[in-house]
View 1 (cartoon, rainbow, N blue to C red):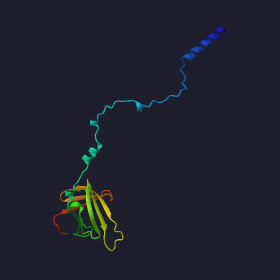
View 2: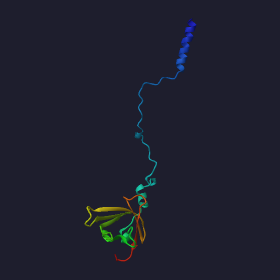
View 3: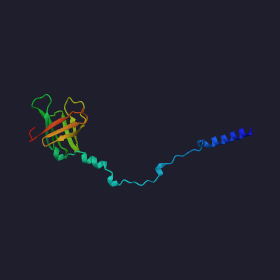
View 4: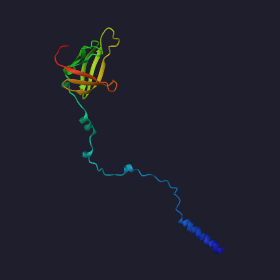
Length: 166
């Protein structure tokens, strides 16, 4: 019986020694990696400047490019045209738009701003309106505008007219 007891104790010791230790009940704290000092390997010359890229891709127009008389056909009226004449220093004249009178204009990059107000006895609201339009195309004879409040795909096309006749 002593032999069995000794063999049993030895087996228990061996089995206990071979088992993996149980996880420690200690609390492990995570290391804050933001405090590790890592040398920056990227030099500022290799980082593209996103502002410069946007400026290079942005179309920009000047006041001089837009000066002139711009007309379009009046919808539903044969041979009638309407539009505006853009002059220097923001001066604008309405052409055949009797109830709408333009007050001034300006251009910023690819955006044409037209200030106007309604006139006439039947107009209930004569508040000033600012039409914001994107210039989609501009040549010596054609101006294509997209009013920002219009449905996608809607464009207004104007033709440049020489001369001062209304």
